[in-house]
Length: 319
Image (cartoon, rainbow, N blue to C red):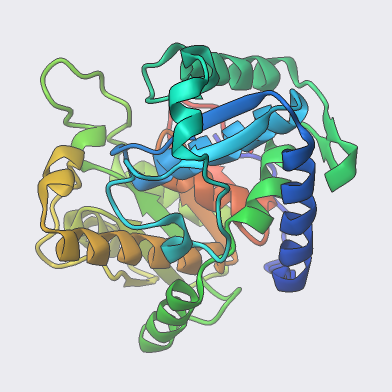
């Protein structure tokens, strides 16, 4: 099942660098004007679980007029500014000890964070219209999140340059290739006691989605944590040139193993994933399992979200 798609392969490439800087400045001023604090702690979850959490928390705080601060010390990868050309407002350490627990989203299981998720679900299912007039935000959940993410999540200079180099090496031209994300590892083979969060979508179904989505595109970039997914796509997408930067020994991402890896290895893996996301956003069309935070993020900041569809057979396409 896919959403209706435009026939044009034109990709919108808004130059948001100057706009993003001005918007973030206005956001910071507005955020500082709120009195009631709200603190989000970044944790050792997946990188884009945390990124999407920041976007949701920022939207929630704006709508509810809360002063949001982000505590990065538990972020088990790099710093936010290593990935993105923006900075997060950090709380003073004294504030952490002085404010009540209901004002701190310390981890994904904390009551404040669960309230955030419940609010996001309610806004999504009710198709509520969200507005923050001071920042020009107006729309339903996807559009409101996108308005924030396009400014907050512009790639850092290093990530942008790495993506440019890799696209040249792979002979990928912006707006002239399709991209697909396939997440395996602990999304489909979780640790004992943990629920299955993803979907092991049959590769033939992925191929059918791609054929329907972008039959005119021959170059296919595969963003995956399992090299076997790229190999399987290469076998079924015989009319496509399939390329990937997935390491040849990668057979699925498992978060506990990543968290335990040496810092240099974690940094390299994290930056490669950020770079892959930048490449995917520059595609003419994107397909991915939206039960994965990576695919949901790519769709949110993609140049043409109307040509982003879900490959999950049991999930309504998003957006």
